Image 1 (cartoon, rainbow, N blue to C red):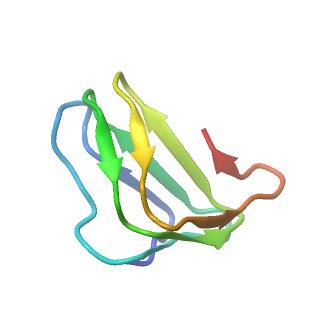
Image 2: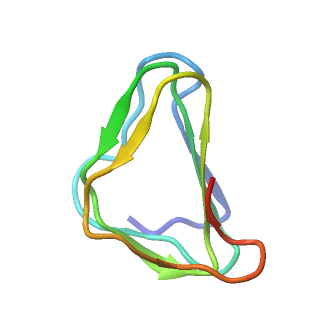
Length: 77
């Protein structure tokens, strides 16, 4: 999956996922998890200059092989 713009997973409830396979996110793109429960992402996250954000209650666990390189305004929140 290639993230373009901003992609939100979930709407504040307990559903929403990204399917299988690696997730390419870079170039000031945003991947936002908005789930109220604990969620484990097993996909690999790849990219540079991207923002990964967790909203809502619960814990987001990144279980894949993640190579998100951060820079100004990027990272995992």
